[in-house]
Length: 248
Image 1 (cartoon, rainbow, N blue to C red):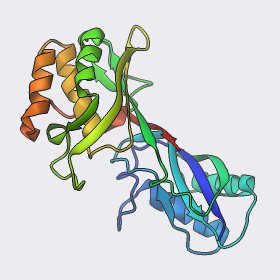
Image 2 (image 1 turned 30 degrees about the horizontal axis):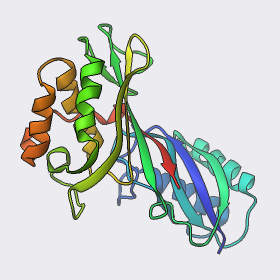
Image 3 (image 1 turned 90 degrees about the horizontal axis):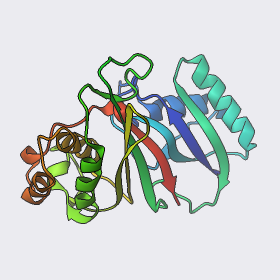
Image 4 (image 1 turned 120 degrees about the vertical axis):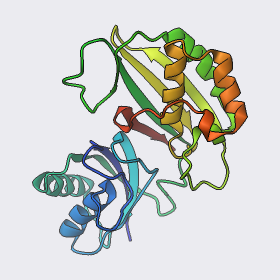
């Protein structure tokens, strides 16, 4: 069976996350139904990572096996047409032929996420449900400086959901940068081979406390080393988070 690599963009707000769940609207389910309709056989796709309800993607990757060979542009156009017809805010950005041993999840060397903060007094209009609105000024330099204490190999128990199913809380974080994109926008860029459930949103919420002066860098270090979920800052909302890229 020929295998294809899909690069996918989606608005996460209408869905209960990426992963197929019985009776619930999910991104995986919407794409599988569209591809099943044009391929005329049951289609299952395998994603590079899960995203929670409300989390967006600009570069999610998945692989799929089809029963016959199709032109890649035909797969893209047919799937996008059926998704649009069904009212799904999902787009297949690229379809590529892939080797039989390519696996969207297990072949990945790293995953990159972006968290957007709009830091201004007026409420959001165009960026509503596309970023986290924080009214009062944040110290981006303090946030970035503190964030470097989370880079590297650590036990991230403090920064993972109580519902996280990962066997180990230990992860190696390759990058956690906090940048000011404009006068009103701040971004947090996180890269690692794998993340824990709610890890990036937990980072964002804790770094926000540093940015508004409620926490010092040492407070963040103490929270990290406490290995206690109750020591985490408030978890940031999902609609500020974007799955940006998967490296292979």
